[in-house]
Length: 90
Image 1: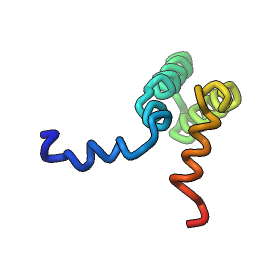
Image 2: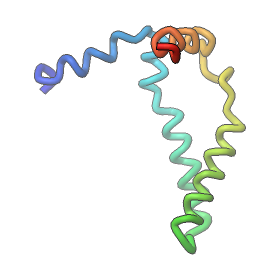
Image 3: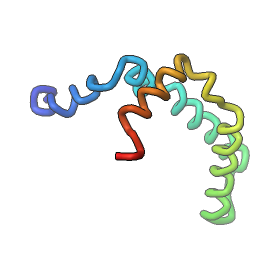
């Protein structure tokens, strides 16, 4: 199967090492899911879909405040690489 999708699989390697490492790290995703599960389990039920969305948004805001770019190793290098690869002026 990897031979069939070789082009898609190898496109990942066009990015610099630091960026590839950030892309493949699942710790952030696992952390978000864990926090959502914890909060939603405590609530047990929601009166509406809108209420659920508000709770999820609140979780994301809380996580955003806690996390800082400095907590990502080599953020300065990664940020510069992202600016070069995805220049907004193109």
